[in-house]
Image (cartoon, helix red, strand yellow):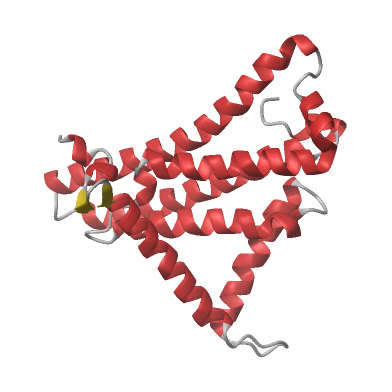
Length: 234
């Protein structure tokens, strides 16, 4: 297996000097453009009342489901985090689902993409944590329950961000390669089965990433007693 088969970052289509258009950038923009186009088409003629279009009903069901899941993790604050967490979920879900399309290379199979998504979560955790507790109060959270644990808590903050990125990258990359190998071995049997399995695992990975991001943000913005109740490390 070539190194270009492991990460789409090394699959370069065009290059101008030090600027490169690789598969990760190309398919990331394609997914963002597709989501923006579909969102525009679904929301341009929204109506109220009981008799609504089927597409609007599906859209409302997705939004209500996401808001319900977020609200269960951070009661009373799900509405404010819905745009960020919902965008994360939709981007990862659409990317992973499109992986079953021949020729499409999922950007989430690149570590650079998953690290970028995890850094967005880390930035949100810090900014909303500072907003909720103030700069000094937020820094004090890392010194609890003892100042001796300050360096370990800081390392833990970065390690769980790294784990968030590596988990998504590893699952998507390994799944893509396994499907390619099985298709090469038995091209007449495995395509349907593996495509269905790929759809399920892709949606599951998007759900896990969004839920873990919500848990991390909730742990940084909750009061200390609530934080202890929802900390995933416990």
